[in-house]
Image (cartoon, rainbow, N blue to C red; front, side, top):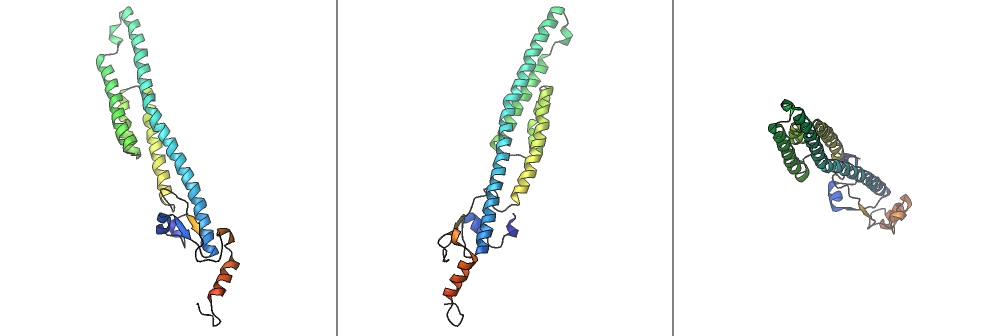
Length: 206
């Protein structure tokens, strides 16, 4: 539900967090807004939670991939040394590149994506790109980050068009100025009765 589709609810009312209804139409619009707000808030929270989980677990995951590579390469190099095949041993430069790439990724990703809350696909790709210096499985993380960033920005753009973004807070509904004792008593008959009492015999408002 976009804000432009609402007749009685304005941005000021949403910011205030409450609305005083005096007609059944206002009540119906408030109910529809609140139902949409609850739905959108739940969807956005699930999206944020799922994205956050992936952002957090990928850092130890990349470290595990790098550690496994070093362990397996060390075992392989030990066997090669025994066979005298020194040309196939991983060079110190290769190991240094892996470590530098991993540390650069952790630094950039931790600061810009996790701490500064950037979710743009290009930013996530660039912050993940140092993993290209590590191992092939870590390239998978770069690809997933690009996809996650694109989906996040697309969904966030959709949410931003909805009334109540970004908090999607439910409105507290009151009936001040109405003869209804509560929102449950707000009907067309009660509004007509209230209007009748407020008018004089000549039909003018008292």
